[in-house]
Image 1: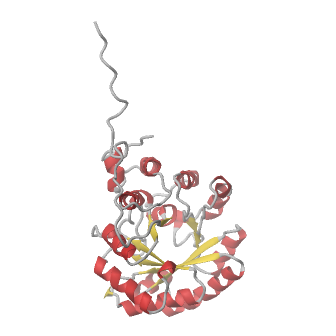
Image 2: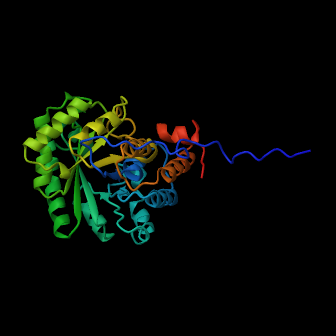
Image 3: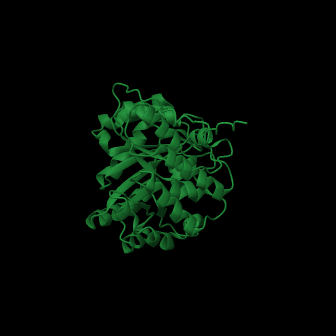
Length: 335
């Protein structure tokens, strides 16, 4: 009796079949830098504390996928964001990663000068400050007015720059605010220009509650261009509350943006704005970019496996559509 022929190890998936098929579109950049925010912006919104060794492994796995900017943590007071209270313990665990992955940057968020002191003590080379384009969110998130927050950030940015540290400026609520509604573009541009003028090397425009649409994105970027801000200094940070994150990203790419924030597995939200659901999933972003023939340097299969690994440790499926498609709805670990 002839033995049956052995079957394949697994049914070929889309990546095995050479998908997504890259098709270049006119007017888009050839390369995009992904600013991975999952370990900081993603995990800060978790209900349960994630062990520091899991965080360190998560960041190491992300770096191994080819991501070259992975935002590691925040030197914020533990009272405000207890999920990131282990920053002092986490950062030393990452010390060997830049040597293993040349060009890797591991920025940390600093809310004030005390946070900067802590970051500098750990020899941080990249830090970020987090401002608001609206008054209500500034008072709820920073416990001060938007102008007072700007005054607080100035010495942080100046001291970091003097120390040779790159500073990124986050600007939240750029398209809509859960208390104030639509945010006037001129208001966003005014705060954004101030962050850049005080020394931030890059400005990340945040759609914190995920209400933006492509027309808004294009109009705001046009406004920054009219104000004399080079598009090369702007990044975008979209949440997928209404399913618009990818379409908004494409609009930004068409306006010349080449830096996009995303969170592995779609982790995250905002602890100070309950209507802010998950960030744009890095896997979904990479799928789209690779389909457009845009280089990212990221191994998508390795990234999907990393998010599946993290989903198992968080005890729930990943919301990323690409992770679900490649690993199954339960995002069981594979590879």
